[in-house]
Image 1: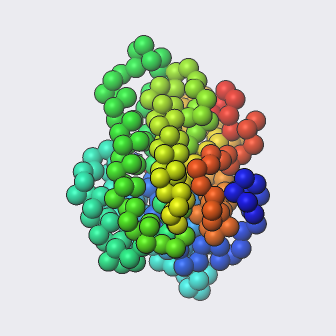
Image 2: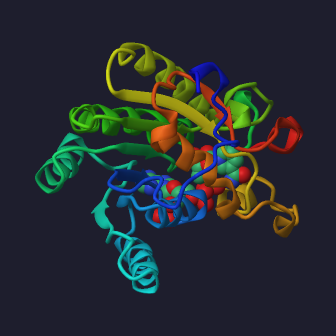
Length: 269
Ligand code: NAP
């Protein structure tokens, strides 16, 4: 399939789609990242869980081990690395890279999923300390993490970076403030890095999951009936497709996990 016609929502995934791949995911302790971590494990990946709360990380770890027990060993045990994107310094990123280097010598996937919503607020009134926090977690820390892990991704013969985007990071919308601007920046980061890595074995793309039944969505739309929204588990196949071998050669592209009518308009996150 040519990169131009690749659509991650239409890829038929095989049961072993991610077998043999090592995939790092930020924010695997809730929402979309949690559903994705379990799904990557189900498709055979060894998952590196990067999160700020060790207890929650252990819960995800145990959930994957429970899948393993159920599937008779076809599922690989995950690894855990504590990482608070707001507080991490260079040494913390280095520690993760060193541990991954020792354990696997490479990484085949990195999903930049963890994010902060900040406050829905007009730019004129936006609280600047919140702005800095959101931009740091959603952009700068992701760039630092990617930069530190890049040698490991380059060591893979088929590596994929997926930046988790948003409808408001592709078309600006009033009151989405730092969150929207941070997602625009992540899209820009994806394009710049994809261009720089064009001749390498590392591809970089963005994926907007669209609205999903998660804590972040609840925070953005407190009066909405969250039960009417898609379960995050239903949105993971396009992520898996981008992480797997069928997306080889596809880079620098912005994708949607749901049709535009259900993921954007006035109801994006
Ligand atoms: P969520 O349920 O709020 O989960 C966010 C995840 O990020 C949690 O695992 C959280 O960890 C982690 N996180 C937050 N701050 C962190 C930090 N400082 N360091 C490390 N981890 C941190 O969000 P979600 O709805 O699943 O969103 C996942 C991604 O999809 C985000 O990039 C979001 O922008 C995007 N998205 C979501 C929607 C939607 O409708 N939900 C729509 C479009 C795009 P804890 O568990 O420790 O809190």
